[in-house]
Image (cartoon, rainbow, N blue to C red; front, side, top):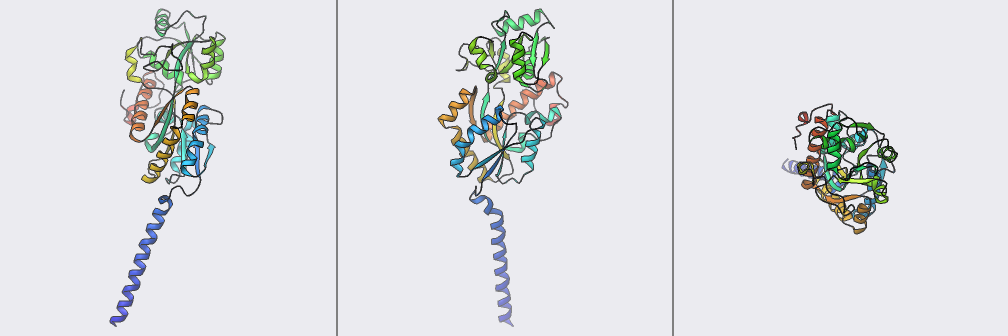
Length: 341
């Protein structure tokens, strides 16, 4: 009888240990040697755009660090809401990355989605785009202050090119309007391209725009850069003053500009986050990629973790409140506990 009980106890112990080992294996094995298979990279915007170009530029420098291929797929729509929700709903195992831009930080106040980057871990914020305020050479302004003074002298007479609420021109216009009376005639266009064409043709008088879209026109003299939306001069525009030269109060909004980064669900295992962070940091440090970013008209950032979170929160605070104060939001930033800058 005692012998039978001993045998039974040994059998139960064996099953229990085996079961524990099985549970440990099933939970840990997918990430212990991460990555064990190729990774999917979801690009927030369509082929040929700035986010797509940046995503495809960084990936070849990262893949050797992971010893796996990152398969890039464009999944646009909903101003980035579709791809953001798609990646958020995938299993948080590090095998689905989101290559995104700044748009999710505005989704809440614009009523597009309840998911922003607070639901993600920032693997790497790669670069920040440069914004400039440009005008036609036929206009008399040669500085931002001259433009602003003219706007005050001639309210509702000067035409500003725009791309609608939430777009770069609209946000920079709201920033300029934070100084007080800024009564211009906003003329909306479907993107930077048509807006620049209109400015070149004299159909609008000035335009806040991305440097990438206006670079060649500035270099050729077809457009005049009045100010760069930054707190100091940049090497790509050495003779163009920062927006804070005449308006030091704008410093509280900066650094600001469209940005590009790589994100995963924040529930991903720690070792997955560490592996991806290390790989993308190495890739973004590559001199060839840095050269690409500069030529692209952007400022290299290469930040992750807490540093990236702080940048993302400030960007969201500045932009959502500028839009809200300009009457362009559907919901107040206070609903999402976003503090004023």
